[in-house]
Length: 161
Image (cartoon, rainbow, N blue to C red):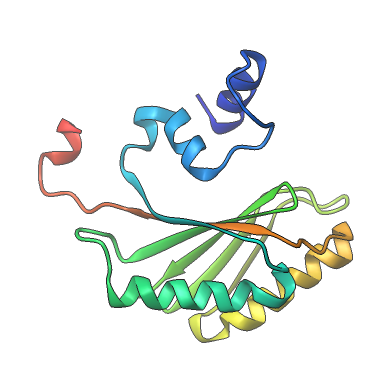
């Protein structure tokens, strides 16, 4: 089942406390299809996104680099949920790139993908805030960041998992 189908089934069968799911709830609902993805941390901020996204991301990224989980892959995936929208930031350490993927419609246009060198994360955060304000009239006063990674497996472990 795809993510939207899982969500619709849970909604139809009264399994959701709220129409929106947190990332940990979505991972649990997806079951074995998400068995290779690990959530490292999920944080909810009661702060204005516009003023704090970059700071909160960099603080948590520093913690990730100082004390990484064992057997993690080199990439870190961060799901940002704000104002009933979720977008994905992909941190590719080996390539020193950050990619933002927003699969929502943007007026009469489709998905949006942006990529910057890792050192320009602050500009990417400012740019995304401008997109929220200019396209959606949105200025979120709270948001969630969920930090995910793929576990590295030794030979044979993936088949056994």
